[in-house]
Amino acid sequence: MLDRYKRTVGIDSVFLREWQQYQGCLYRCCLRRMRGNQTEAEDALSMAMLRAREGWRTSSKAIDNVKGWLVRLVNNLCTNLLKKRDRLVFEIVEELWVSQEEEPDLAATRQDLEFFFEGEVNNLSPKLRETFFLYWKEELSYKEIAERLAISQGTARKRVSNARAILRER
Image (cartoon, rainbow, N blue to C red; front, top):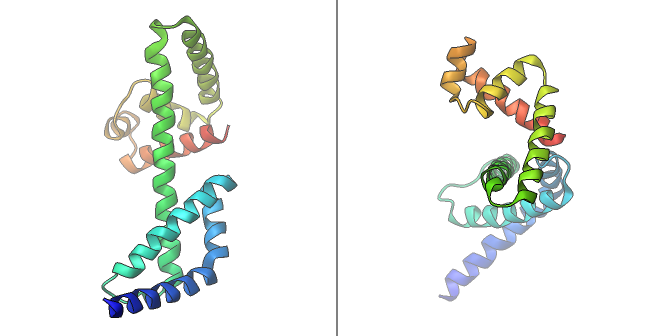
């Protein structure tokens, strides 16, 4: 038992030394991925440290490129957090739209939100607007959008992704 404790402490001290060496770089990476939001970047960095520590402990192979491994972990974590946040935002918007029949105040808020959102969608470039409209209003799959616009599925995904990024910034 004592041997395992010593081994764990040794692993943790090596990890902590490596983490501190790259922490500034990793924070900048989080900040960039979280679009400049310092609070979200700090939260992401904290979560990344916990995941990295666990991964460091349980890794069956030696980690040759520590910085690359940590940067990849941070990027993947930030991507997952952004996807989760996007899903939450769309769920809230949908909930407002569905609940309009129940409360007049929410109906007015939903209408204002929809008017604003459609206005922002109309400000997109024609290619992005058309692709996003098919995705958002007509609820077509990427495959259906690609067939209708005679583009690849990858291009359809990229256009929707770019439109979302632009709309998120506004």
